[in-house]
Amino acid sequence: MGPNPTDRGKNGTKQSVLVDGDGGPLGAVIAAANVNDHLLLRQTIEAMVIERPQPTPPAPQHLCLDADYDNPASREAAAANKYTAHIVPKDKEKRSQEHQPGYKPRRWVVERTLAWLCKCRAILVRYDKKDENYLGLIQLACSLFWYRRLHRLGRCDSNPGP
Image (cartoon, rainbow, N blue to C red; front, side, top):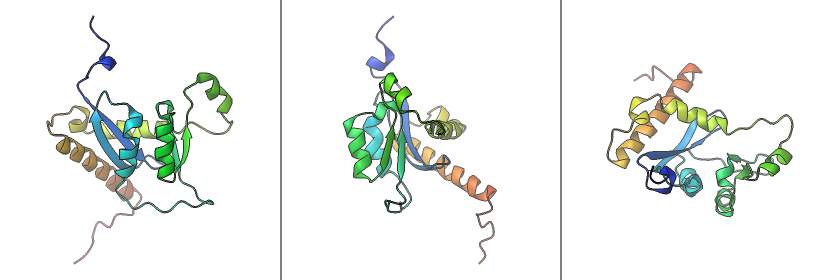
């Protein structure tokens, strides 16, 4: 049978994407498929392409993360970037205790965005050998996502004038 694929260097690429509350991509990084998600958190936050407003006590900025980020390094990265971290606990008993009625899990927003990005064939199957080219395709797909969203909302100026 051989070794477990997670215990050896797997072929493939991991995509780490930071999204807003509606699923709009704000920053993306790539790494080898066998790199743990929490090791990419700081890079993903730093990859944000827009200027972020300063969080204030009345308007904090939240960062929702899954159980892979339940460690001190992830909490430190979130605090260093002034995010209020919402991390699902690794322990299943704590998960059931911390669930508050009326609040839905928010992690699916990132998964939905990754599914939308994978509709681009060049991202779904990686044809590029160079990491820079593949990351560029992901960033192009993110910009197309925003263009389509803003166009649908009527916020794109299709006739900018002279």
